[in-house]
Length: 466
Ligand SMILES: Cc1cc2nc3c(=O)[nH]c(=O)nc-3n(C[C@H](O)[C@H](O)[C@H](O)COP(=O)(O)OP(=O)(O)OC[C@H]3O[C@@H](n4cnc5c(N)ncnc54)[C@H](O)[C@@H]3O)c2cc1C
Picture 1 (cartoon, helix red, strand yellow):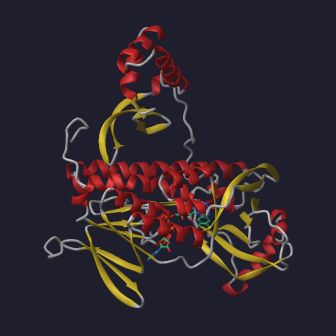
Picture 2: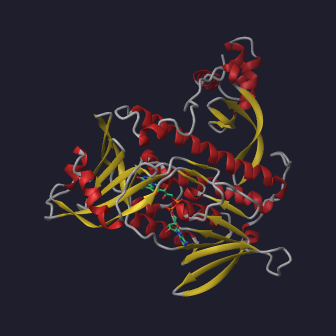
Picture 3: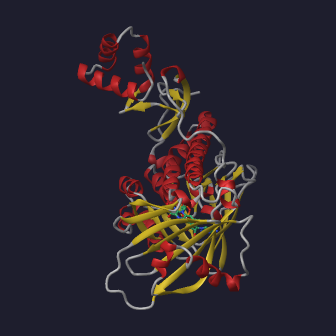
């Protein structure tokens, strides 16, 4: 195992330019991964085809911030100003929070614009299957089948990033939540509206929940989410009427469909929570929904996609250049995504459990107990905190480092304010009193006493030290 103190020659961007990486899928996960890889000097080709429907989605401020921090400036400009989001749950209306509405066709087009501007080669094409060729094959690589302008072709890459979202072929899924479907219906206003205030709302009902939104152009997006196992959906021709009659029973939705009429048939989107198998191997990596697809109730899908993609370049860089750390890199990617999956699944479970009007209805009964009974947060006390060697990201690589493990952070915390945590923790644990702990921290960090006092206080507030 190479430790951080063992210098390993850093691969130069020039060497990386000879390594070809195919990214399949140009959503937030694929594009962000492609951007990160191009910044490391790799030759990145992104294959993508537009999605078949016009979705409107909502994102939080942290998505806007992540896009800004990662240089996706054209994409960030497609986010509408944050608008109010009301929630009716347990028949109670909660004070509005807010979300930025995004029109996915514009958002997705801007992602590609940002990718091209950063030097990613974008190929608009439908991707078929990809195959790892045997080493005995002269090319010794991965063959990706794609078709563009009606012509079939093949591309040879050294590494593949699978980022086709829920459309990515799934290996035998490791974990699937209750099968869930959302029906999306667009409504257009009957009359030109003078001024439309973009807004959205969520409302629960006996066999599911609805997300309804109106965009600045007055188009309305009405999404009904159901349990696949228990809902008796009519055939395709009647689906529009089915949605309409459901929406008319929901107080929040009626406000959104007033003076409007449906536009085309509803579009069904699968939204079952899925944690895929084989997220990382020596020649391919899954990111975004292709690895971890969450329940849209949390409205965190894009955030999750970005989180998985931001760590991917360091994982791939390690797999390609430091085979001695391949197992570490794969375990880092898999553990982080598994952790995110459970975190968001438990947030969803706790929110479903709050809705107690229909405890025996199949939709609510299944979701209030899935994925498990583990609490979202665990109590952290000094005697539950330990120190261990775990994989962490160090610049563009995955290395093994000493981290602090807590019940709430089982994957470990390496640094706090850019300072390694475990030496600080050990120093404080060995001190007899606060004064001594502070003095020892001053020596360890070569910092002023006020700074040491501040760090000690923060660690105590976290429950890491007495
Ligand atoms: C009903 C529903 C509502 C949602 N609402 C929200 C929300 O409000 N807020 C939120 O943050 N998230 C929401 N999500 C989740 C969000 O859409 C995803 O989590 C996010 O887009 C995942 O990003 P990605 O890059 O992994 O995949 P995607 O965004 O799906 O990108 C994959 C890309 O690959 C392309 N592609 C697929 N197959 C091929 C192929 N064979 N060849 C070439 N290209 C291909 C697709 O067209 C697409 O451009 C919702 C999801 C659902 C199902």
